[in-house]
Amino acid sequence: MNKTISSAEAAIYDIQEGAVIMLGGFGLCGIPENLIHALVSKGTRHLTCISNNAGVDDFGIGLMLKQRQVKKMISSYVGENAEFERQLLSGELEVELIPQGTLASRCMAAGYGMPAIFTPAGVGTEVAEGKEVRTFNGKDYLLEYAFEADFALVKAWKGDTEGNLVYKATARNFNPLMAMAGKITIAEVEELVPAGALHPNEIHTPGIYVHRVLQGAGYEKRIEQRTVRNN
Amino acid sequence: MALTKEQIAQRIALELKDGYYVNLGIGIPTLVANYISKDINVVLQSENGLLGMGPFPLAGEEDPDLINAGKQTITALPGSSFFDSALSFGMIRAGKVDLTVLGAMEVSQNGDIANWKVPGKMVKGMGGAMDLVASAKNIIVAMQHTDKQGNSKLLPTCTLPITGLKCVRKVVTELAVFEIIEGTFHLTEYAPGVQIDEIRAKTAGKMIIVDHVAEIKLQPKAGLI
Image 1 (tube, each protein chain N blue to C red):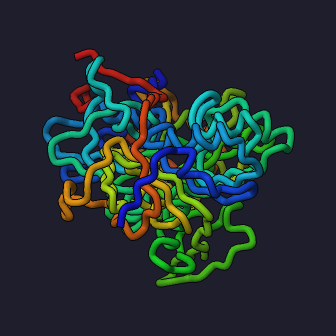
Image 2 (cartoon, rainbow over the protein chains, first blue to last red; image 1 turned 30 degrees about the vertical axis):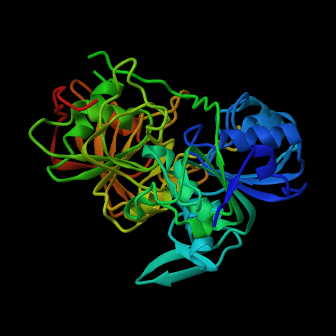
């Protein structure tokens, strides 16, 4: 089943205004750069974005925020973006903050066909407001629902024409979880190879979850906190 | 003399035992990695998907695909593994991580922690903090004893929005080390030259002094990062 698609523009052709989209990455590590650029060029608005972070002012989801394409962000941490803060304080942007592990598990649940999960994260905090609490073995857990997303945009290191994906190092993060969770999953990869070139033992995301796979280009891979040792 | 941030990290390093899997939060907790004894094997977990975190890379060897939870470039040691964010919090939730070291804005005498939100200020989010405090077996807080206005951060009850309930076991500040037992800060150690009266004056929560209270000792610099 050949799932390759020739351009980022073609890959996102059916993302409509108001869509709910997941975007992989942790900070700027492992974000789908090409697909974000295509969305910025297209200018699709009123998007709900599920992503651990919201990029920085001039990179990643920050580029979409700058063009006011985002109606709502669902994230765990959004600290590094002045335009984000401005839109939040002025009421232009809606934000739902949820614990990082809850965010990951709600993606996972969607990909596993499970409607909800129980997690202890947020019990007794404002995150718990309005949520069902269940006690198991004397400990309280919150009921958290699987995400429903129209599209998942993910970035992998290698992918084959069948849509099988392999991630590199900590650029894996939310990518395989979101890849499983989108109604339509679009993956961009640094290296697109023919079916058979990846060993079945090494596949992280089986191609059944992936609808379109794109050879990415021009990766910037910006580093947020370049930190080195002296010796 | 009150401890420096480095010295708070040096004291906490003594809590790391051979065979521990440890998650270090951002800020003072990150510095703990500098003082892990060469005599023990400790594996550092980074919740963005790495077990076996190594030192920062040499200049020119940074890999943008290899970062820690503070988004700093990092390295992976021999024997390390990468995984996705659900698995990462799965191992935390399942109690596989032996020790978590976190910063905090407030800790209460029953072990509640507040460290993610100040009403009226820009809210950046809780990141993985709520997951960690809800599940970790052993949580040590590294923080300053008072805020910038001099108000105690060790309180009867937290005034800021809570991150987690009844989870902190130990607090290390520039002045003292406390164990939290049955709703009380137990003063076990004091910084060299710091008077217990000063600690008492700066601790708003219920505090008792243990019989064997002693001066803080520090782990010499030895470690990984």
